[in-house]
Image (cartoon, rainbow, N blue to C red; front, side, top):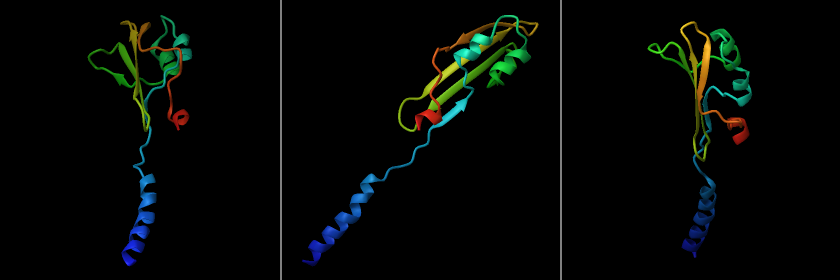
Length: 115
């Protein structure tokens, strides 16, 4: 009888442990670049104007000073990682010549909307 009570007690103590899991945090990094911001860009803008619209680039390569890289990644606690990259190109006079990369019409998922 005593062992039966012990088994019942251990069973009821172990049941809540099944609901325990490791806490995983969503991680958002980089610059969120929206289609609206990209629509404001046009050829001939100088670097200061582009920086005012898009913010500081994530990467300015010293070997390619006329290229700015904007990158964004979002890794939700559970699910697939979303990665976006935008390359902004300037000419030798520091005027905008083009934008390349992963440009989408929708805004990326953020930590606030994923929670």
